[in-house]
Image 1 (tube, rainbow, N blue to C red):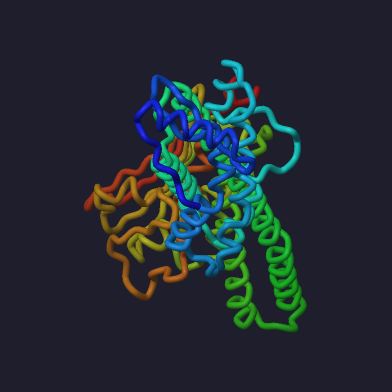
Image 2: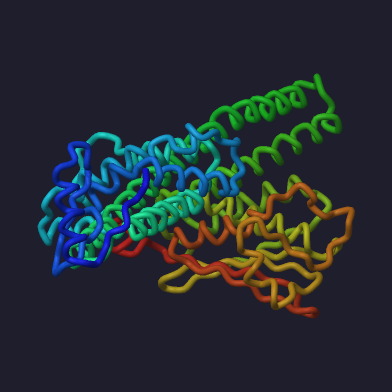
Length: 418
């Protein structure tokens, strides 16, 4: 479609206005103000120039780098036409100040049906677009509309500025709908992933572990032959547990725990005894004192100490003892895990608690855990955080490394109410 060039003379403007009014196929509203003809209203322009706008969107979307499948023109455009149609219809309607404020915040009222922007998010997610790439598409759409509209003579009057404001609000509303949908779909995928790991993998592993124990106990399999099978199954189970906990904490922003009354000292002793059985050639010492009654998630606390002991066994000096100290204050019960061995460099003492990070300080190649995920200490911190406690590390070349945990005896009122 050839875009007309509007003149600045009064007679020229009048002729253009009359021609537009008498043209039966015209979809534009030509406005004449103070002798100057301005371009079409934006709501009409989005409809009449949809093909040109969508072609610009197609061109940009084809350049977006993503990890998914290549998209053809039809798939690239998918619901962009519906998004433009929705925005155009919105601009043509009157709007109150309250409605404008709500839309600017992405809180426009919903009809209950899936919007074109939400459907667009579904298609982009399936195609492998990251959420930031999808948002960039909207930025490109905004820029294309404004450029093409400006070239056609738009955005020259006070009325145009109001249209422009409403268009930006409508684009922002579409972004909010797309991102919200994308986020919800991602969370559903995460929950499905957790469910698969939690049920379809852990259950068969449990069968392997139990069957191995039965075979050894009944003499059908020697303890020497059964130990590698059992250890490997326990190892896989531990990795699965770490991945499940990581994805759940990332999704929910807080490790889920269930507090029950108990004695922390008794709970920690169980873990030390189980770890000693698995590592008969290492010495684990326990030093305890004080009243250790409180309310905790026993399973999570066991997981916490087990991870800290595993870290000490891996990185501590091979022949040295590992010491677990347990003590209490009026409001907290505390414990620490100490090992001799190489110092954790100061620059790493915060980084080792980050997910998918592993310590790089010295450990001999024979003992290095090549298949670890780098989630153990991250999960430890998340468990402590869920209990509203603290986890700290101190390390030096002479004194060795100590991880110290302090846990409140009970949840705070705010946490309990939540």
